[in-house]
Image 1 (cartoon, rainbow, N blue to C red):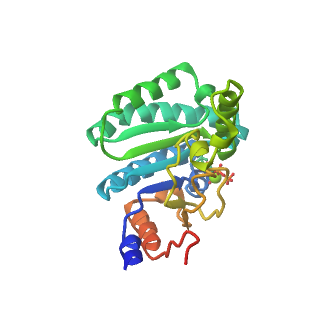
Image 2: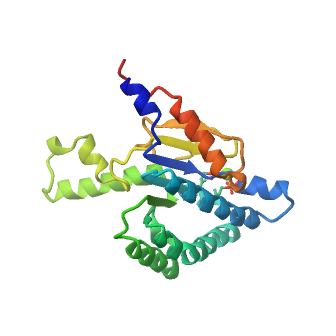
Length: 238
Ligand code: IPE
Ligand code: IPE
Ligand code: MG
């Protein structure tokens, strides 16, 4: 009984690996940048649908630490697109009562982008609706490493004893704390995590779709949630 009620629920935290912009561009005979631009449309549709469904947290993987291996040109485009999108959308996000969090090593971004992120986050800080998390220059390994550094620093100064370091304590030092992911969606047919939120994905339901990210829309999200609702989440119990 309890399980049925739970399985009908909308996932509280959805995370998405938005993949396939490049292949979409290739299939349409347009430059990769155009694929990324079309990807922003899919972001808009997905955010809107998640707000309608009263999802509590939506985390979007926008740029991984490994994406720094791409050409300078593509990285430059992506950062420019991020800045332009942030500026264009921030007031709409505010009207939708959305809170914003940006996780990742933001130190690589230029001052303008860092300022736009900080301004956007603070503008939306008192909103009470859905939390939108953008993972930018983010990596699961980076996240765990920065948490270890914080704790080691605190331990060295006598701030925390070894016996106080347990899973809950550790998770508090991760970018999103212990905000575990209920449903992970990856577009474009790839079936891997690509160094996304390793800790928070420990017990997530995984959903892979062949749809390329720019073609992903509200009905694609609904299909993923349908699949989620049919899962039996046991968390190791019987
Ligand atoms: C996802 O699309 C966007 C980012 C990783 C920034 P890709 O650019 O990875 O597209 P494919 O995988 O080459 O199709
Ligand atoms: C993962 O996609 C990162 C983002 C979607 C931001 P990639 O396209 O970079 O991952 P791989 O190379 O297929 O693992
Ligand atoms: Mg890709």
